[in-house]
Length: 381
Length: 122
Image (cartoon, rainbow over all chains, first blue to last red; front, top):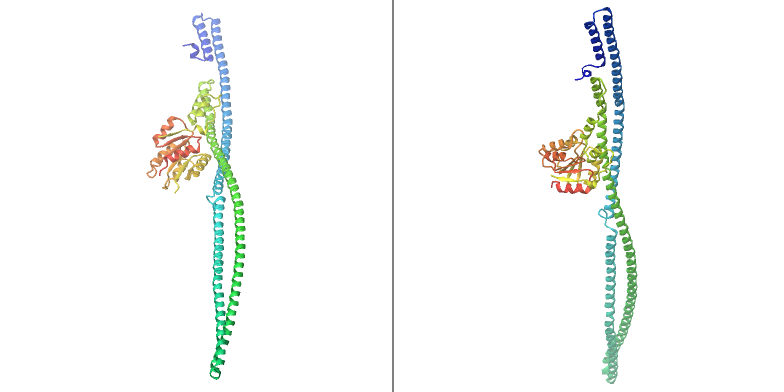
């Protein structure tokens, strides 16, 4: 053990001075000069010790002042650092949360747009409407054609009546012949009645009446023949009119069918274009939705950065207390102690959750690559 | 009928991202800001799956998980821990507390939906 370990400089000088004075008194000749020398040595020792203690006191005061300044430094700085970090963390969280909400709304509206464009919520796609219209208009054209065919059948049946008119004309001619023969017979009877004289007078009257009847029959037969001719002419005119009407209707149906087909073709082309456009819109919407979802994934950085900032902020909050403990150590030791960061660093390390925090801690000068969502791993238990 | 999933995370943006992914896949979602808040949401309603963060204020994810497993109505409800925590020691802690899976953030929604489809109760 060294002497300096036993006493500090003031105590050592006092010890040496007093020892010198005692030695002079004990080993001297007790003469006045030796007593004066011993006393002088003792006084010098006391003065030296007092002076040294004053110097040490000034040094301790300077140290205490320095430590207090360090504490004030950390007390003043740490809360501001911490508050700034916390403020930034909160602002970032609010902004990112707001961004995420907006992205979520965009994503949701894109979903609705996609659903509408694919017709899952509407009345069907333009393509389906076009096909349905084609079917319905085809049915209308078929009905018109059926009506036309029905009318043609009616005309055919009316034309069939002409055959009966010929028979009626034949019958009218037969009536005419019978009338002529009856008239001839009546004339002959009248002649024969004249030959009979007085006795044939009554018979002549009958023959006269037969002639009149024959004449009337002939006239009736002529009127029948005339009416049959008129009916034939009317039937022919009706058939001609029906034929002309059928032709016009056939032409109208043909034109309508052509118009319908042209309209449907135009509509189909429009539907195809619309379908193509819708498909491109759907494709683009899906692409945008994918980008929005990817942006949402990237927003997870806020959670990670927020955690890092929180860990650092908590560690900064511990700095004033660490400085106070350090000051107490210095005061207790009577001299400045080494200021070591290990304890605070260890506390900071214990708060880490992410691998990159630990990597950064171990190699602060090497910025680690940010974790990617593709790196995410999952463990099933 | 849509299945219900409880998301527990102190980060609103993470709750948003997870919620969007799940709602997009047809799930109903309820949210808790931390373990303590999430426990108030477990009020007897049917929950088919829980997705929980680990490091949260008020009540952390592991404590929350232990409390869930102590509740008769939810002891068989599968729980996925979705966290930035990647230490094996923490994973073991989660496994011992009754978690069914441990997923490290950041994540891709498709990965999360795959895990959910695998674990969600019928």
